[in-house]
Image (cartoon, rainbow, N blue to C red; front, side, top):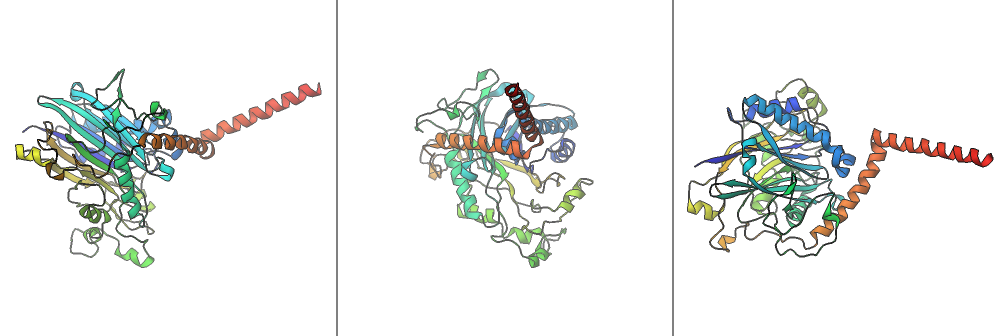
Length: 443
């Protein structure tokens, strides 16, 4: 059966511009050749400083352009094929960028998007942004939902992370996205998640025909800095000797496999307390966080792996990519229908961040997920989501957006050189005006 290949990458940018050449080089090393994936997905956390992230617009363009350039360079190494940007979306400091091979452009039927903040006062310093796209094939439309997320930090933040996931499921409500000069077709009511548009308008609280994170006929992929750690308490100086060190012998006490046994996400997934119904490919790579400044300096001169850790955090697999398996009714119709994992690994450390990027390469059947014959199909989460849509999701997001603008303006004028320059110019102008007025009074 024909398949559709997807490369999903998650990276905590640490509020720095990425280095396109290095990023592209690392991507090229893991891409299938000679033909690259059909779809490229980037889940980006801490995309930019808080002022730029909260205000958005043109302030984020330089950060997005670096990713575009990385994709262009990567595609050039394949020798054929180009990628077009399907959608770029952010909620606060978390962004989602989806690219597709240009020949798939004519098959794109519709796009929907959603976003929710779960940070301080529900702002977007932590949160999730998502897109759902419909790709036309002979049998109908392949629906794919991609989510970029950033959950609560710290070793002792386990319960908060689980609560963040619940709030994400309750707050991600999908609406149509403008595609050029026209609105993409949609199967939901005419709502919008435009951060700078009608979202701020008053609306009813109805959720009758709204589309949430789980839908019967859509694939679901989650990538992000989920922030699950390997301990619930901060490390002590004595613990540093237990940190993973380079070794290929998994029986060696210094091998990362021993620390992986304490991974919070694995435990919480098995208990059903987070990322409901999602699963993960086997983790066969070292922790992705938190690397020392020394390691980052080494990464600036070599692509080799170095395991030099910051001593005040437990090394952890914070950066993960999960997916929802095909529903039972699709597998029963044709046992050959499968999601096939081809690679799940961490890319080399970038000098701009203390996180390593993580990538998942997989293929899905190139046919739609059919609707179930039985709406009670064995309690499948596609039909019975773990949490209902919050009836006041729109008002909550609008209120948080207003707070983001206030915080963003405050950060812009106090923390950025250009903001300070504007304040200084305004002050000089005010003083000059005052001086002119005083001279006129005296005359």
